[in-house]
Structures are given as structure tokens and as C-alpha cells.
Image (cartoon, rainbow, N blue to C red; front, top):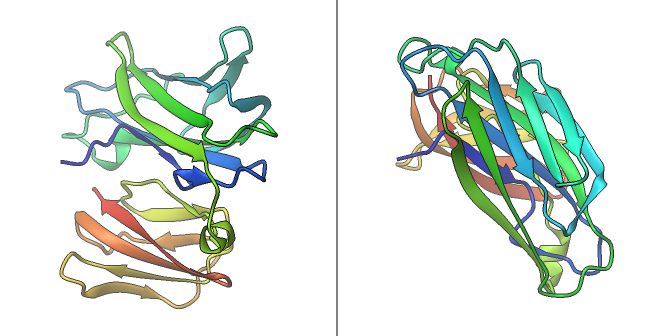
Length: 221
């Protein structure tokens, strides 16, 4: 099953050790409880191999306050009075996300790793721990060095999806049988309406000037 409380990173596992990469993270969360969540707090300890001074809040589904504790290298995202509905009551109203970017430290040695895990608190409940993302500085092939990194969020999505990291020109969405269920020839403002798609897992083929990339897309309403 697909865990709606997760953390995604736009860079591949292997990073170019000769470049100071910008990593963009998306933290998705969903209230799977029985009652609305008045407040949601997400804490994110930042890897020692990331430059904390370059942290930048990119966006969020709901109003959020972000704070950085330099002493313990933890970023806290506070969704106060969010009143997040239970999934069984309101699927769309039960979901949220936050997006931020941060640079790795310059001059990291080959094989150095960047791991990150987020902790999601719904009111006074124990933390829900996300998956751990992993990036590692490796010697890359020419193909990997020229690859464009695109973040697609929210994922799962219900009404629309947005792209960061490149200007998206077109989008094809295929179901698990390989049938094209959505074909957008011209993407406007890096956003696509997906409300016509049924719940399920799809393959998204994203087109830019530099080529195409493929990502898994989940629709949940």
C-alpha cells in the first residue's frame, strides 16, 4: 500500500561530486485518524552535509510557519489551526504538504551521504516517521550529469499537480495497463489539472526542452 505520510527528494540517489547540488524536498502528510487535527507540526533534522544557511521554503498546501533551530539543525513547520479533516470524512481536506530547498555543502568528498527523515505530529499524537531519503556523492556518467531533476507535488494528488526544477512543456499520464489516460500538449505555469483521473497509481511522462523523465503518480480523492 502507498504511505501518504512520506518524504520525496528531486535529486537522484547519486549526486555529482563536482557540483554543489540543490536538493528540493516534499513532505506529504494525511490525517488518517478519526477526528480533525487542529494543529500539524513537522520536524525535519537536517543532515550535517547540507548547508543550513541555504534553507528556503518553497511552498505548502496550507498556511505554515517555518523556523530553523541552528543548534540542533532542525527545521520545524507549524500548521497552526489547520483543522485537517479525517480521510474518511474529506479525502482532499485530509491532505497537506510542504516543499523546501537546500544546498549541499560545497566540496563534499566522494561517497559522502545525505540522509533525511521527517517527523509528523497530528495534535498530541506520537510522531509519524517518514521514509528516509538518501543521496550520495558519486562519480557520474555523462547521461546522469545532463539529467534534469523535476519535482512533482503533491503526490498523492487529487485535483492538480505542480512541477518544480524545470519548465514542463507536456505531460502524458498512463495507467498500469499502459493506456494513455491524460495527454497535455501544453503545460501552463507548470501545473496540470488531474481531477478527471480515478484513484490509482499512474506513470507520468514529463517533457521538457532537455528530454523526458518518468515518475510514479498517485491519485487519491
